[in-house]
Image (cartoon, rainbow, N blue to C red):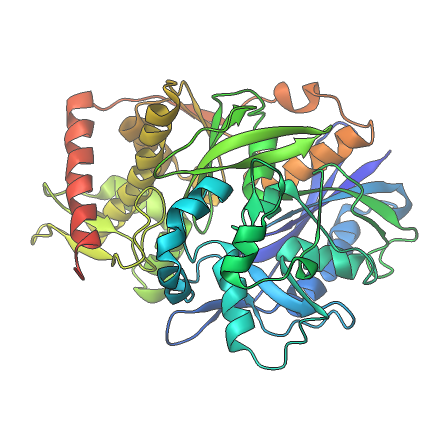
Length: 488
């Protein structure tokens, strides 16, 4: 029996997964890492801690699966995107913690470059924003002492891990990660000279961009495996989930619910221009580029975490669906807008602030929880509506994954608000499965039927009256407007 090892390095933890020759998940192990958050709300990760966890979690999954490590023949890596760091190519030591995608500290850098926002959008497909890697990398270069620019590498987390796994020899990334840095030209498919100049980054500081199904390196995972195996795929976590969801044809859409959420439509060979969504790359596989439209939301699962850890209203995420079902009908105009770090797509308002509006004395714990659930679904709905407008394509189904996809209440209102069937994946978190499939295909172990024949775990269909959901959505737009205008 041959096995494929998959690493999913996400915002909250690092996961190792083992898949058999049929593409079935046989074991999974996770290790969380610290969320380093200071009094200003800046969010960081310790990249060296993440690498240590990666090695340990690989050992753990082999032990729990009780497989012979000699039978593990290939590996894939999916990673949190936009999270960025600067490190020394000779020592592999980071000069500073990795700045996490959620962190908005580089907003002043973007404000200083505001006159170039149209150029940035034209070249990279993305709105000028501190969400993406370029401004984060520029912030490190401008604010951290002791950086030797002749030895410094500016990268996303995938490149750092590949470098360490290759015993400090390979400086590589893939198209799905490069296109999220705001330094990459998605038309020429090269690092862009104008973008590098704007953000003050030298070309020599960047990694080689490779096809997503390349052999990125050979690794024995610091001796955990008896022989070095090929790491045969690298994908950003959302693109990996798109692949695992079998969204391989233009017009197919998936939503990954995690700490934040990514809503992504495969647009095939066509790059659509959008005023409020991101035009980006899905992958380059078998030498073929696929484009996507994508909208990213800062707070989805993180909104539930806020209820648990900060407000201490509920004990665990398992309580959310039950409480939401117990809630009374919400007052008209009662909304939660989770703009804790501004708003991402489709608003791109860094100065927006979180708010609760329209509350009366009928609102208790259950009602607040329900409003938070609705906020998650309404943010996804925002993006789906714009995707249909930009492409002039009717979305016929939404394929979903991620931890919150287990929440039946959330999935039902998602179907209601978006007026589209929702198909929930059997596998809760698909990023790891996606790179396992790409690796298996590249090595001739899996066929396309491995993923296209998979059935959903559950399906939800719109139940609420369309007039009622339209009214709810219009109220949401007014609440967002209040959030955006709070400091104006």
